[in-house]
Image 1 (cartoon, rainbow, N blue to C red):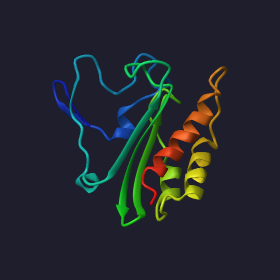
Image 2: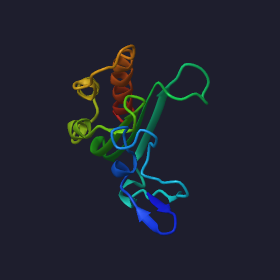
Image 3: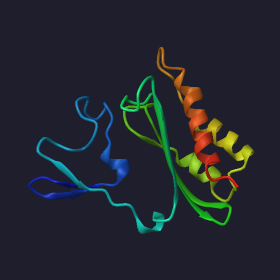
Length: 150
């Protein structure tokens, strides 16, 4: 991500979003007067299979309760590489690197889908009154992996 202000700064996506422990009033590293001018997607992901889904209360314009965004690079029917992130479950998007490692080298079959969903939520601790997000996140991750299964 490239941010313009008096100068030009470049950030990896993982470093762009910040949580409330860093600054309770901001969600990104951007300061007043900054402008996000570019998002760079590496060429290695140019022909990937992409998946996005959000669960919401009402219309498509609503904020998500939980969402998943995924990119899968395939070699035939095998997942060569994956990037999977969820949102609405923390103060910033969360990349699921453990799930990415799990699905690499698989076909995304049903057993992998179930394992990916379970691993995605394995260490989550819901807050009061939002435990309903756990099964949503599990199912969205399963559906993302299912999107590339043979």
